[in-house]
Image 1: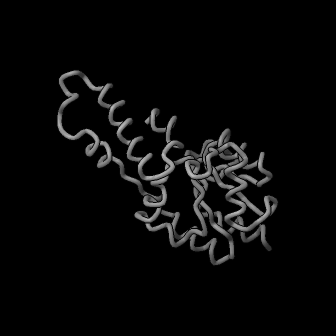
Image 2: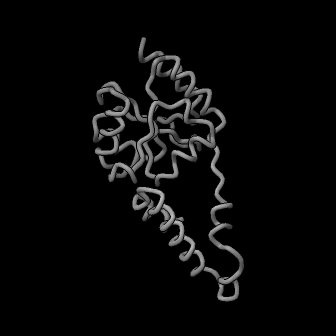
Length: 177
């Protein structure tokens, strides 16, 4: 996974994504004991092991935000397969846009990726709120681009953060009122 995280921005199209997956497979193969390196189709096993699910509250929260007129744009340090993942999880119809680092050529915390998201949403930075789960990547990057930022800390350890997306529509509604 560390190799993937270090190189995911190189997967700017399907050919590059295939190449990245091949390289990840070879990294995994190299980490296996010698006797296990030739066993079966390692790439197929690696891809089959990936299971993406949205958080249970995400569809309802996204729908509620949409009813409030809020533009919902995913901003992610990911490869081009994110669109497929969002479609499989059923979130695509609930979104107004998707901004992927591999397509933009900039990763969070670079303000450029947030600026692209603002353009996709058609809003100014002072009208936007970025909800993210990492302080140094999500929140610092969003703030550097002039957005307000809200920390999502599902562990509940950060008292200044939200622990779930569930209350987000109410928070946004009170801000808009």
